[in-house]
Image 1 (tube, rainbow, N blue to C red):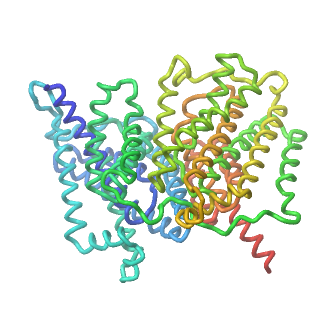
Image 2 (image 1 turned 60 degrees about the horizontal axis):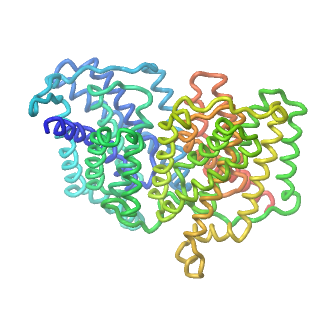
Length: 613
């Protein structure tokens, strides 16, 4: 019993940290509707700043807690600066471009932190006066963790007082319930959003600074915590602090006891829990239905098939790309092959976002399923490459068909997080099933046969298959199927009133997008000669989302342009500097500010204005 009690208390200490971070995310999203990927970066900055200040002042209890408070306030100021200098300029842009901007901040912060503190893990000193442990039924338990356990309910109580007993809190709650009405009654949204970003970022920084005595500070803290924080927010219910607190408690205990009861699935247990909760309670434990999904693609002008000379642009582009091997070297062909593959991946995701208004955070799962499907057939069954490439979209499509049946029953961020849950489940199985997938060692030796082994030959093969798939996706966009998807995106209620089964069409689009991503994954496996579980990881899904947004979600050429621009920028930055993330992040921020509709959307507007004039 003493052992289980200590495990229970450890789960409470973990829950306290999760609540501090997720409460800030809940507040920010509830008021501003911003899916803030940079929230994890603020947590990491809080840890690094806390480590620096604790090393200087942390010899006494007053110095230690003063350092923690100072780190939290500094991170809060950085969050307010991000709102004033960046996000405030994007409030009239589609909400997904705000997500893209915060991703650019993530890249900048990662390299900035590496430049300032280095890439090595940093071990902080213990909290003065709390360095020992206490015996609980003859089992030692850290004193510092007991303080964290008490800190969680204290912060919840203070936040409740702030939002329920102050004028500022009343305004925040009013804006959360009805932003337009609050603005009509004289509430200044700009000042309110700045305060909200300050508070949310300060809470993230506080959570990070409090981790200094518990774990090593490193550059991987941001993505790890932000995914867990999103899980907590979604399970608890969007905008509900009490729900976030309850979800933190449940997930903390799940992590504490899951390793004892389910040791084989500990990596994915939290996501399984989230998937079950969302299936049973569509809006989380204490959430409520929203009038409009906050992450749905904004309705744009209707897609119109090109006429005149412009209708031959895709064929002309394919012809030019097919002629590249006649003048380019091997390195250029390798890069272009990857660009073509990533263009297909981005276009498959655009089918969901641009046409269906369905934002997926786990699209890499189907890219990885296609890659592993092709690699397993070659490695374990000695299948020829054509058969492996044919199996890749089939396996990925079946996986998307199964996952999509659950996902399309939700909308907005709940849909996005459910797709992430399924992606993490697939990644966990791939990562831990050593006997079949090779685990983190991956599968090696997946090379094309002799007739396609040359760089030019494989490039032409990739261009033919991916180009054909892109043309099919384009055909689907202008078919009744595509118009039906857009009808469900713009107004599901009106579409259903005229007899359209919106959910069934979204489900089919999910399977079609998964199949196209699977073909891209199969081509990628033979291009690289190996596959690893990282193909299914969260960063790959985020990269695909960034490609779509950089190009523009309101044009069919957007994902192709975005994939080319993103990969070429990434490749160029990596080849020229060690700080390539900072350079890439800065370029993304500039593009977001200069082209709020994406690069292809900007070009389309220029073309339209020139034609009309």
